[in-house]
Image (cartoon, rainbow, N blue to C red; front, side):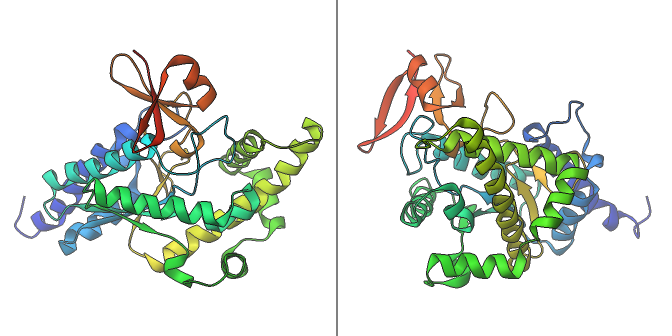
Length: 310
């Protein structure tokens, strides 16, 4: 290899190594395993950081708030599921640092306020959840992580005003989204997944199940509109970042889906479930009701934390 080509190949080699660290945690519905080379967009983005000798910045929309359904979660504040997930993200950055000394950091883009009105969660609970995430990051010494939310963009404006601003500036039209759901399998899967979560999260519906499903299908469009808007806002504020996603993503797309913890399906997240420590010491996520059947409740700092099998 000539001296003139060597500097150009080094960023690609290092970025391939970093993608290989992420691949075991890829959150996807694709069945076949993929090599790092199947993610050209991420390889190119990571290589750009490496050429500059800068820390790699990942943005991860998610960690919005706890589900409002008490049959699924232990309360409205982060618990052991979030602790484990945050620790995992920090350790992933630490692993990257071993291969690339400038390291990496993850900006958790807490998106609860973007669609809190559509999922039935009070804004005060969303604020408390994000504030507790920041506290946990500080208490656990997770120096590779930070939290970003609408307060960092629009300050102390009323929450409805913030949502209106976000929607007006960034959200796609509902007609455009409906057309995409009809023609794109990935968007259809997202729409169905969010509809299912909305149905499951509604604990106080008094009408028929078919009426609830119709209502949730309509709200799902709104949630996706706001989620898209939030993603575009993140891109404006963190334009060079590598975009992670808590939703399953096909191989080679612009977002890299990442699995935070073991769970029965590719859609389960810590904020829609409770953590269960199995008798062999491993962890999994599941609805609170099911976890309560399998283990005993463990408290931490005076609050329910997780379940544990003996």
